Image (cartoon, rainbow, N blue to C red; front, side):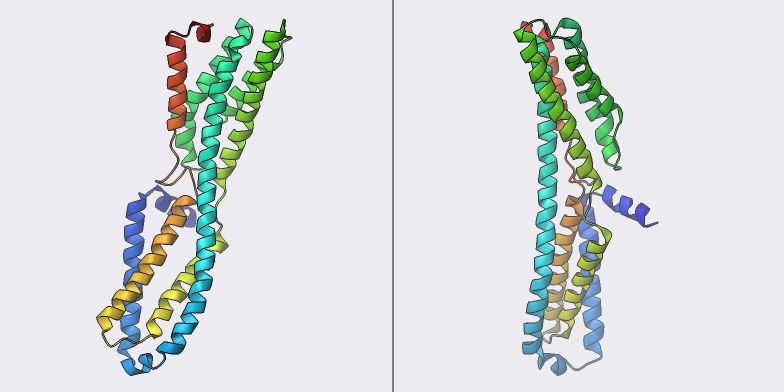
Length: 274
């Protein structure tokens, strides 16, 4: 049940999640404050403002440190995943180029595998990653290309250099692919989310114990606190899965590789069509 609900929220556009979450948080914060202040005289709250201010400063700072740390960690996680996609696609394109010095049969096999791999990323793997999956054929294509490039005996120094360079790029492609898939399966964790949500509720509820002569202004301030905290939590939620939410990293790099290979095969670079 929880898994289905989680997948449902992941599939929603980030702006919609933010609007809904912020509205619910503001409604909770303002309704709770209105109910609490309705049952006690306003002077009872005003007289404790000074002490409450010191306490909320300490509690708010502790919560801000935890929330800020996890947000930065999630952003670095997202940025690292984007770097992996760029490195992986560049390695595929470089391996396609380096294969120019291989014998004809091996060159055709390596290049065919790499082109199919790039097309597979766009057509199959990226859609599957939205659900946390991947296409196993990608690993088969990489290993087939490595087998083609690494199992022949070079006839001269040119072929030896081409073999070494191609295998180097294919090794990078293989390693970075595994890291990318690992990034897509990691998250913040249920307990961390529980701590963050508990802290958000505590900080919001603490706003209720303050007193303000103008109750509307006080409601506005409390609502703003709830919206600000919720906005950061939504950002954190969207960043934790680099390939699954509406902020996900797209397959544009792989589309560029497919287009680049097509340009090399059909353009004026005769040596690239060898």
